Length: 430
Image (cartoon, rainbow, N blue to C red; front, side, top):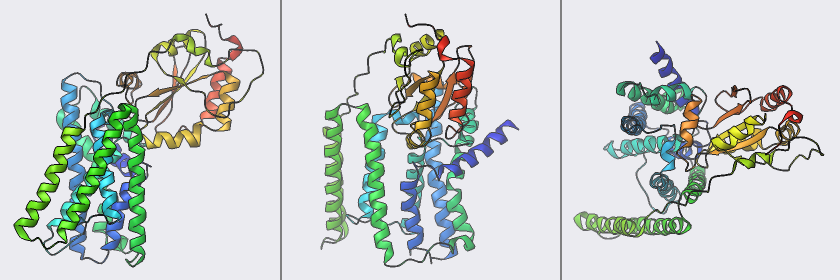
């Protein structure tokens, strides 16, 4: 029964992922293809939807296999942990960049829903499903946590992990499946026209924006020279795709055209393998426990800062704060988590929350998992495997763990904790 409940949570959580900030940019790309081929036959729409589902399932099967292997090796697990790998992040940036170039017309790949042979368009739909899966996995969503925790649990059977990941993939693909199998829904799509060219250009720039956002994550993980080298590789990739398009429309035909394109791609891949080597950025030095003094204990005029005053989270910092009677609000986040950034701007870094923190003296600590693998253990101890996660640690050993999603009611929770542990009773910093 528990497995069925978690499977249902996976479907609902995957469905909600479609409206999370991390998925929107790539979902626009798929929607533009559906609109452009709105009038294809019902059979082609169904086959396209199934191909899209297959793409999501293939990608999630890969993640499930990775989880099973890491669990067997005794590694800490978390939803979105692959985003701590610079190679994976760089691959996502490159994919978004390539799809953006395709959308703005630098080169052309077949993204048709259906065509004469039927193969090319459906293969593109498989790629769409896999790409949207790759971009969505850094994000968490309501209901997803239960399924993720069950899938990543140490005592989960391999087949349970696979089914739970597939349930999320099915939920993620569900809107496209509904459009493909329910004709009345597909009729809600606008008719294609000249406006589509403008829309495709906007989609392209949206994909470029998503690539820039992910590139910021890569910059936090590798040295500046490695990040710059990667940009050079992207320039070469863009040039290769432009040359590929020129060859396609040249007088070369048959084997000569295929050989020329193979030479271009082979040269590009060889250059990238020779030129690109990611060097990890040096880890930050551990913070002294005295950093707890970031939040005033008592006395003096209370000043509300213009922005959040974060203390980098460590177990030592938390222990020192709790020992002096000071509660700690912790935001588990990462630069690759778009939802984390959105919620921070809309629910945390606002005047009401900054005022509540200043008046109660509660420490605001940020647990940044962008490149810190050890923090997964702290997150797992809370029974969570995904980001964002919000919790208030209390000096009496208890904690207030927020439901998945945005930190609703944060101000009220902070003030309630402040009443239980008033700042004028904090012990002095040694």
